[in-house]
Each structure stands twice: as structure tokens, then as C-alpha cells.
Image (cartoon, rainbow, N blue to C red; front, top):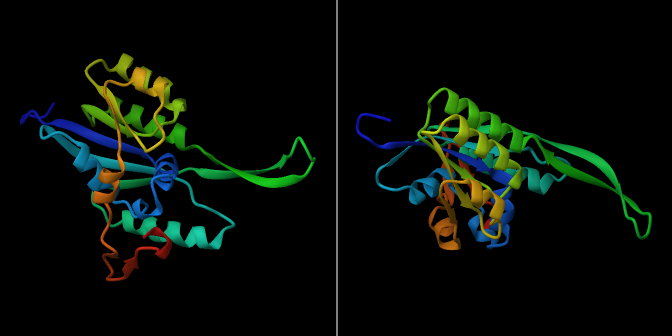
Length: 207
């Protein structure tokens, strides 16, 4: 613990879990400043020392790729923020009823990347508490392991809209449901300037 007794927080955001939760709250929440959101959820005695945003690059959909690229570039303007990439794995699915086949993509590695990052940071004593934004039950084992191996540390969880998960709640040492108002209040400005002066504009479909 730091001398000023502030609790050091590192945030770990499951980008796609948060995105699909926000989609159900309305596209006008999608231009989210994740650092602004996390800061709005912390207590006065907590200090955000770093934020990790986990996502994967969308492929084979130019419009979605363009919106995601713009959004990722906006996140890259934030200080003390790191983007960690997984990947999409494509395969062929078959409809059991009609036999029709179609391509299907699954996002991979995000839960593993989050687990490894949280564990490494705990081992290196980079935080007192991990703030995990997700509703993915695949992260139950690493939450339990961290709190067992490092009893002085804790993991608390923010559930995206419509992503509440009882199993995650039961192993965390604190939880909250992130409401629409918090998301709306934590949007980027409509225009975000990159360090090189380039202006990123909020995607039209995200208003």
C-alpha cells in the first residue's frame, strides 16, 4: 500500500463483453471513454494507476472495422492505458435443421489475456485491488486464484449492462452493475485530437 494510503487500482476491461452490453443500452453509449468511466466508479481513497483494455481486431466487415479503428485510436490517446489484443478464429457452422453451412467467428484469447495480466500484476505488486469490467464466467478461476495466492489483494467487478453473472459475483470481493447514465456521462467528446493533430470523429452510428 502506498504511503498516502490510497488503494492502488488497475482496471481490466473486457472490451467485447462491455461493447455488447452497451449495444443493448443504445448505440449512443458506444463512444465510451473507458478511463473516464473507471474514474467515475472509484472511491475517493482509490487511485487508478493503469488501465488495460482487451479486444480483438474485427475482420471481413469494412464498416465495423472502420468504426473499431477509430475507437481504438481514441483510446490510444489516453494516458496510462494499454490495449491488449486477442484474435478472431473463423470456422464453418452447420445448421442442424436445414444443413446449411455458414462462416462463424469467435473471439479468442481475451479471457486468457486478462487472467495472465491480472496474475502478473498481482505477483509484481502493481495493485492493491483489480477492477475487472466483465460478465464472463470464464474469469471465475483466475479471480479465485489471485485472491487465494495474494490474500492482501482483492478483485472487484463492474458488470456491463445486461451482463450480470452470479458466479462472478460470488467470487469477487465487491461488485456493481454499470448503468446507462454512467456510460452516457463517460463519453469521449465528439472530436478527439491525436498527438499528431489528426481529429478523430465519433462514428455516425454511435450517436
